[in-house]
Length: 250
Image 1: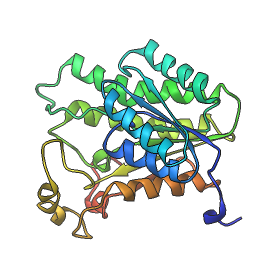
Image 2 (image 1 turned 60 degrees about the horizontal axis):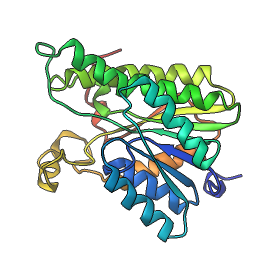
Image 3 (image 1 turned 30 degrees about the horizontal axis):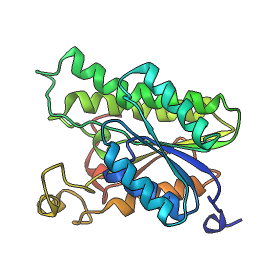
């Protein structure tokens, strides 16, 4: 069977941080493929409701689950609530993220631990819950192209995404052969909150393709990985080649 002939229709996906930005784009892309979508949110209840309404108006199926992924017991509840509403989870997209500025000099224990809980422990917990179902599935972890270099202005974030990159490889081994685990590392895709496209245009010189991408590029990468049955433990860089600039980590 050719990759493009593999249907995702009828599968059920849990997407963390689905209400906005990349999460929303991936949720809509999955719904267009006939995937039943469980949209997780924390404080973005209105946006999550609008997303689910859009999916259902288009003939799809969507549910909302709320939870603070910085709280371990709420992470497990998110998964239980998703299953209670939509049934077993076939696809897990670990997308929820925070992105606050700090350096190695002013990062605190609290800031590092908060990032680790959201970016590493929550994805790990959700992946383990998914594996306990005993069925086949896919996990896609959202990383950052700068895991290969060094984001000195977001130290706590950088540390936690590096951990998630390692977890992606570890889970690919531990959850095989039933569950496929991969990562996507976006680059110049969306401007920070409060910025517009001019922010992206001002940085196109940083990658070899001299342009920026968009949420659909990330969604297409996700669909490629979900249709792949022989690719696991990989990180797919959607960054115009930025990651080839040089590696801080061997």
